[in-house]
Image 1 (cartoon, rainbow, N blue to C red):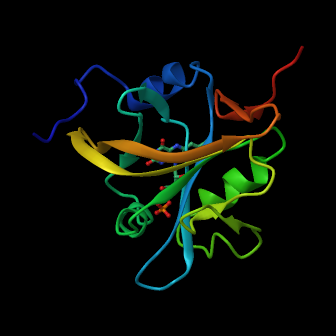
Image 2 (image 1 turned 120 degrees about the vertical axis):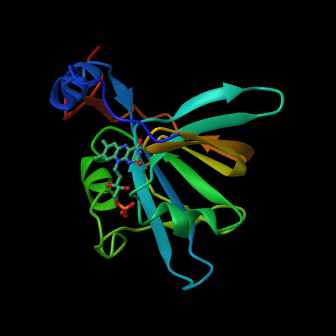
Length: 165
Ligand SMILES: Cc1cc2nc3c(=O)[nH]c(=O)nc-3n(C[C@H](O)[C@H](O)[C@H](O)COP(=O)(O)O)c2cc1C
């Protein structure tokens, strides 16, 4: 069902209030099977869902031009960005650009791009997709994963931040 904002609900206010919820940021990457080139997007809607079976989820806007490329790859890599990786996030959120022009990567076990310096990587495939307003909730099954001892990149009220002790 297509929807619209409740008439008295201001979209700017919606964004402003929801921006008070601090999150991490992931870079979802894959090799587009149609071109053989790396593709990806930055997302802060990522969450862990289930241990058995191992599932995670994130939300993708219907306007995303990268998600259709990512989803036709059999598997993708969810990179948990580390503090100081603001530029990786900015590069992967730039619409239309060659997002990987200045980004280094190495292949995950199934060949998807792992971003060096990330705090963690999760190799996954689409398990289910649910329409939710102007986004899809993507539930993904985890196949392999790893983490480094690094602090996370944080996103809060439109700004990048880091944990302070
Ligand atoms: C911090 C941050 C978080 C983002 N989170 C999401 C998200 O959860 N879902 C989404 O669809 N786009 C998100 N975006 C936007 C995408 O990274 C990207 O800009 C968008 O998909 C447009 O690029 P595309 O057309 O290449 O997909 C986020 C951007 C930033 C900077």
